[in-house]
Length: 455
Image (cartoon, rainbow, N blue to C red):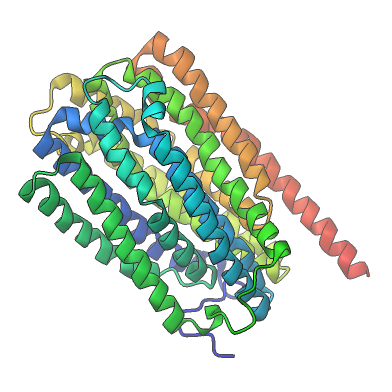
């Protein structure tokens, strides 16, 4: 059967070259995603002012809690597809695709309904500053109403990446990014729509990317084109998809619960600190794209090689990916150490000295621990790609505990520096769980394969 020129088999060839070749387009895609997030923040801060910037920043952790669950869910849905592809079971793969779409529709409708009804209550529980809570509500409600579009793009791009093609989603994200910038300027500057316009621009641009990506997948990927008789819902397949997707989504959400608690503590330090934290967070997320791309790569790499029963190759890929991740972490720290403070000044027209210093502290503390973050993403997503998504929940619990401790103890004790230590502490906790978990997973898989070969 014709596979299509974009399909890439990650079970053959040099692991290092394949990982780099797959991760670079994912990295560029993540950069463009962060790029238009940063553009949103830049325009909000420079056009609407520091209060509007703080309003958007106050929604960051709850945004991560809800939208992060959706993204994790969609990523998990793609794992069985990658495993079926690695095993060359193409009919089973297409049945997974069909059930993935049905399951995604149900989850999108349910999540959108629940969170939209409770948005203001969530913001109040987070102790959002009274001078920005209305703007925060206006912004995040639009983001939540756009959850179906967010899930559409992430499901389709996840399916395409499951077949080894990480370039196609990049092209649509580039288009989406420039569309987002144009809509930002039109809605916020020309029409004066405020933070509502910023959120609307983000959702509309992602909707366009998702719809175009869907039609492209149908037209250019015959292996993913569901045939007649393969569309029926299957309880076993849906159960497998949920077993992979829900734990990955919960991993994001459980981690985000700690972030919400931490954000609530940071909110008590005032809107100026929140604005500085928002600017630093956007910059840090931009650099963290490299770690996210390596994680996404290892999900597909692990899934395909597990399907092909090549455990030694999985270990080789892990080693090569860690070397790449550590190198990128050192480079990122050097850049932020030298120029991090100047980057913060881009977000506000006339930043105060206090805001610049606060942002600089956040950036230095986080970037100094990027090697820990590299290990978190690489080990976590590889474990998930191997089919042990539930372990990711425990890693998320470890991060939640660390951020909760930071919010309840370090922030009241050390203020800004306590908040800046939260992420490094969370990465230490997560790595302490993930590294032994990976060793356990590989031992278990080897025993399983040995038993199956014995029969």
